[in-house]
Image 1 (cartoon, protein in one colour):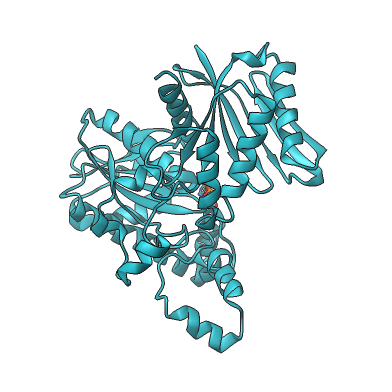
Image 2 (cartoon, protein in one colour):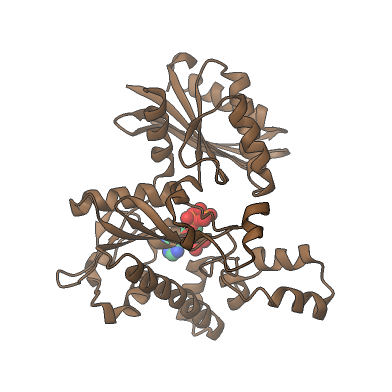
Length: 394
Ligand code: ADP
């Protein structure tokens, strides 16, 4: 048995899971929030222990120290040597990385160069990597990229209809994100179907959301693009819009390009349309109360998802299955039902009782449904740990 730590470091947060491999048993998990503040939060869960501590954590190094201390103090591990590898989620791997990789100085340099494409993420992912390397210098660290799974897309899928030099000179293309989740879920669906070369449409619907068309285990298209802003309508992100809206709105409002970008990232989507919330539970509550803007937001949300599913069904030459994952995909039976109702022309049908489920892996379509539908809770941490094991056992 090998203990592997999965890490996701953000600007003021750090999530972790210690997993026993290959059994894929979670030994400890938790997260830090508000790193940099005197009242940072440290959640730690292991066996019988469930703690929430409010403590001063002024930087990521302090957070990692606390994490390591908690792992030993709680006796989840006796010795740090038991940790056989650390897998770091890295948002952007550009065109350089089409797979996970063992981190060395060269890889660190590349991740740093790629910060140009993911300025809000890669630098923080890199901070996490460097601190773990400093505190646990003998443990191999592996980078698992959110973009890597989509590197299998063909040029005709990943290019935009813009001057070709934009791609050559500036790397303007669709990269796609949520790759680790799409890979994990499509893998699970293939297993559930008992079919290795399955055609699967994975709908990752969380606060951020993306859909991926998976053929024979490989991504052939996905809805996020050069950045995570495009594709589906999300909690606070606009998804696809006509790019000409941006200069038009700059002229109309005198806002800066950064302010407009912020509006599109933080004030749009379910929040922007409903005027109430980005949280689908509150949208559902609003719908119950007859709130017209919530009804509109939900209709726009499910319409967009259904049209991408239909498009990917055609691109795949017929999907075997549709999988729902992410906070909304796993929990909202109403949203799943509304999406599938928009696809009745494809002879898809959900079983009302089976669909009445939250966060549990399950077939939810009827026997007569021509495309099987599943709820599959995602597990990016396990996917990261699998990559650590694969690369460190070579
Ligand atoms: P992130 O993209 O931040 O990882 P998550 O995958 O955790 O997001 O999804 C968060 C979203 O899931 C919330 O905004 C909320 O809308 C939705 N959600 C969580 N639980 C439920 C539920 N029981 N019913 C409906 N929606 C839910």
